[in-house]
Image 1: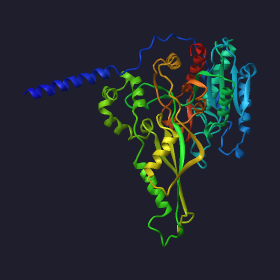
Image 2: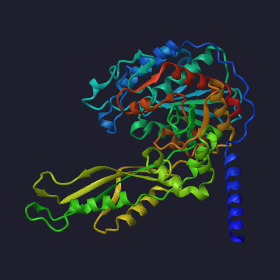
Image 3: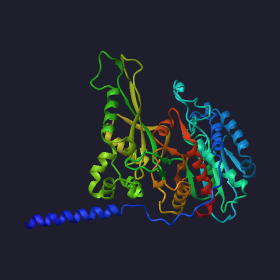
Image 4: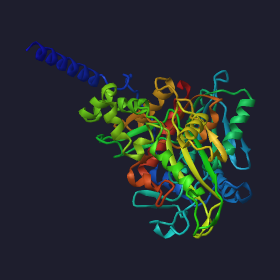
Length: 486
């Protein structure tokens, strides 16, 4: 009987601890948010401004020799026409032929500047899929409450949104309390030479940026399980990136007399080992994200995340079963390219695979290479960089910083019912090139993205709602108005 009582007391104490931790699993308390005057905005006019920008096929290519700059020059001529005060009153420089950097002089030159970023380039439309679009991808159509076209979200909404806000402030005679840089890259989708050139120039000029804002986070609608409200996903950092090539050599010859292990078989075995040995899990970033959702999520979900010390096996199993959430808890492994023989009856002399890794903070390019080498465990396989490019994860900005708080306030000033939570960005942005220049970098553009909009990014029927784009413009406007606090 005594043992039963001890067990019962233990269960009650455990339940009490779990409940107390669950109730305390909430975002930091914040002060009341002061209202801000946003003025009247013509949403249809804003929509048409973005739609026109989408008619310029500013597609970036990795091969500089094939890069077509004319659509970028045409786009910039349009921007000068639409935003005459910005281009006339704010000095700007051109880097790498088409990347723009504006320097908007602030009243207090003793303070470090801030930097707002977006990119002009877009990815191509997959050949043969043009007829699958509801409206032509480069027609810039406003219909059915949406702005349709390649770049509607990624990322001309950012370029036009920032410029709309700046132009409005200039028309109103606003002088920023500190200097504001505006950077619009032309090749973010293929590595960001333009952004790197700007980062290098700022570093050489001994300029430190207190606050940087780039694309990456959005307002998620219907994307967070158990949460009905929209959630502004502010990225305090982003994962790193590297692609590795695994290569093996064989004897070649006729397929009628194959060896016990061909070069292709060796690569297949290595790929299998990598997919069966995923990188270790780190739940910390996801737990912090869920903490910001607080009581807006179902109680059971909140209880599990609040007590991850006990329920981590359950959480890991659930999160890694979905590619979207799996990407937030580990360095991911994606086999993207395979190469072998030129004929079906010829043994390959050389076979290879390219594997792309998105690197969680805590890992590095070097640690990924070490991990891959250990898992493959085959000295006959050569592991090398593919594409000559790789980047470590960015530093993770402080979610208790003034910059994060002001950005959160801005979201709520424009859209009071929208929740705000920090969400690590799993893709790459130009912001990663500014790690040595910026104290705190965040990734967020205030457009709404649901499941259908998400499918359109780099896919078919890219679009953004007219109302959502207008919200994003207002958020840039409000953020600039509060630049002195950042």
